[in-house]
Length: 469
Image (tube, rainbow, N blue to C red; front, side, top):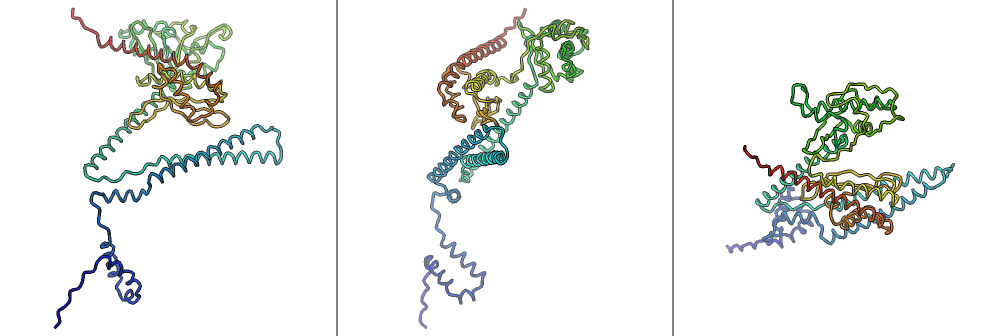
């Protein structure tokens, strides 16, 4: 019996080459079981898979394959998006010009011309909205970040988890600060500050000095709240405009929600008065600022209430100095308050010199990458009829500085980023710079003097020495 010859092992290359021949022969495909055919295909795929290269992570390679974007492709996509945005910006300017031309048409249009003008207005508005939506989509597309690859090791996963937790904690802290900031904004909108309370209530210092005695049973703030309500009612009743008295709530608790009295050694007693609504605050401030003369006073004024412990009968006849309360509930708002005159003057100069229609100034809570959020000032301008333009955020740290030229350069850069035509006319912008320079210098000096005074007061309080007699 002849010896059996050993079969040669089938190489991977032969297996791969044998697959087309098997698929080409229809007889073998018909007789073969589908399950066995599937298992054979899986064996072929597994055997033909390339071996992993040492030192590489398959997950990273898969992620790179999914991303599929090289730096050159990313740059081309960004340049294409930028070109689209530039063309849409030009189209938007052309549409604004068309709307301006249509608005300047005579008002006596009739018939088909009037219909055409109205249809062009509607079409222009629709195209403007579409352009803006496409611009927003381009911005979102450019801001999309590539997802990081999966962690390569257990330590890397722990590190990423710690970074994620820290990021979440920072976000929660920023949200809490933002909530406090919004509450302070709401308080400032319905509060006003009386720098010298004695000008309203002549007996307030005597009343505060005797608060702890048996003659006075209520807290001092409640007494001042009641007497200040009497003051407002008495002055409103003495005015010829009867609508003022009708608008004042009948009780002190309905008019004021809280009154905070401030007493410092060597300084007059002041107070922050918080009303329930901004409308009531504006009404009280208007009544306090009113001047009482023979032309605006009733012939026989009768006060609806009797004066309290802190007030006298003639107090309401004296005009008082009052100012709106700023965001002074937290120390971190000091630069925000100090920079407000600079931005208000800038907006006023832009409106008068550069012929802008209106503006809007609002404080914002800005979150910065890797840093806790901080209060910023923001401004939005309107050059023509329609909604306000894009809002610009300004850092108070850069508006309050001893370098006036740096502040002016910062303002010009930030404004020109959203409104390029502001600095296009050199003569007008130079006038704005010239008129704004004294305001920047005075604001910085005021901020320095206030900061020095507060630091001195805090150091004196910390350095007090108690001597035992």
